Amino acid sequence: MTPISDFVHVNGIRLHYLEWGGNGPALIFLTGMGSSAYIFNHFAPRFTDQFRVLALTRRGHGDSDYPDTGYDADTLTEDIRQFMEALNVDQASLVGHSLAGVELTHFAATHPTRVKKLIYLDALDDRRRLPELREHNPLRNVEIKKEASFPRTLADYIANLKQDFPEFAEVWSELWDEEIAHGVKVNDEGVVVDRMPPVIEKMLHENLISGYAPKRVEAPIPILSFYALGLPKLSNAYTAEQKAAHAHFCRTVRAPFAKSLMAEFQQRFPQAKIVELPDGHHYCFIAQETLVYDEMRKFLLGEQQPV
Image 1 (cartoon, rainbow, N blue to C red):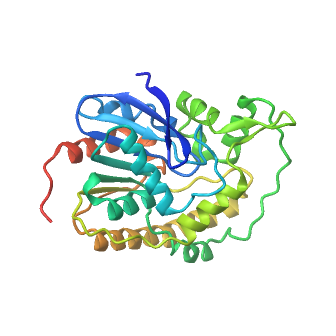
Image 2: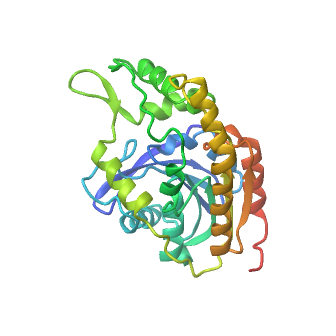
Image 3: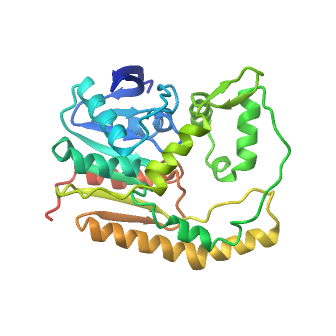
């Protein structure tokens, strides 16, 4: 299904979005760090038989504007609210991947009557404890040296990405080719580079990752949260010993840590249904598409559970 690709002028900037159509309540997908609405171009259309399906590209990402400010939870939440206003959406179920977990919680706390249901796709909304996990990572001080690369084509840029991040390579498809195409540009030297400047990435990390405490959600909004617990893959730049040490760390430290984060989330949201994906990929809606789709569909179409 080919979506409508368009822009809205909200909050003083222009934001890109995709709409796949459909009849019924609005279902809005929000992206993870570095991704655009195109990352949902295979998954989101599966819901058009029951929902009006849209995906928003956050400021500083993809084809949206790249303003110098506005990368805090309040502004990003206001971007979403004004996007809904522009598209005549009074209430929606929000689906967020990765970094968008912050936006889900903050939006629900700020505008509870505008939210029907929330779905977190391996999307932490509280990352303040992550530094303690990194302190135990045996590879935290390992520096991987690699030759400087100056890709002149999108294909070369993608080849580098697959080599450096094998977790992407294992879920690659034509979907990713299109997604990456909307997240890069050719600089003045003719080199393909990420469109997001380092200063914006830094602001997002400071405002939403290291410095964000989740806002309290008072309304008993139905919640579904997926946790992908698969073992992250390392590039071949690491030695066999380093890979073994990392695997041991993931089994003995990272996995229990993830369980503690799940418990904290469940304590804050007693009504939440949590789905663990033992071998799950961070992009679970791609790698474990059928399972995630089935769980989401049951949750979205089922009756609201009493709190």
